[in-house]
Length: 198
Image: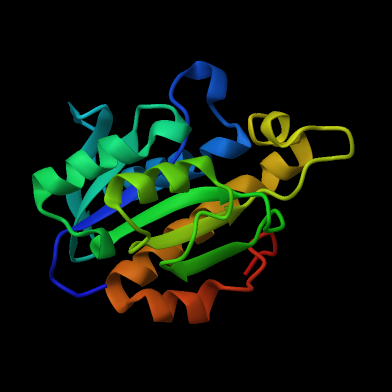
């Protein structure tokens, strides 16, 4: 990601009380953490998204959460990016991933959707996958539980205790990507277990 350009940082999730603190809302949780830590307020609503503008360290960002459901995340973000004239390659999308173990994050430049409906919708809306992803591991479902039930379920009490540590780690990864580039973020965070205290 080039320096000194406005970035769009996006947390994916589903709107509404029903979905609060579910695995599928890991992206919302990280976006909320960034907002708190860098005093960015989600004080604007437009294009079916809430967003705020501010600085992460010294990087100018639009921090956003689409308020359409996960599988319709793309159009609000495409409109927001167009409004701020932010190209897809200057967007960072934070989302849950069942293919990563709980506590792991993986930073990825470009690529496919890996079966994630939010990413699929964004790729359709932008006409490709030219954006950086920060994948938050939520692990696979237990035997007999559907993928949908799993991602829309809440974290178990023992996992909830380490969740804040993982969300803080993901926040640190976002800062690293914005300030020092995607490759630097990958080197520092890919393969790291955030459930372990530093």
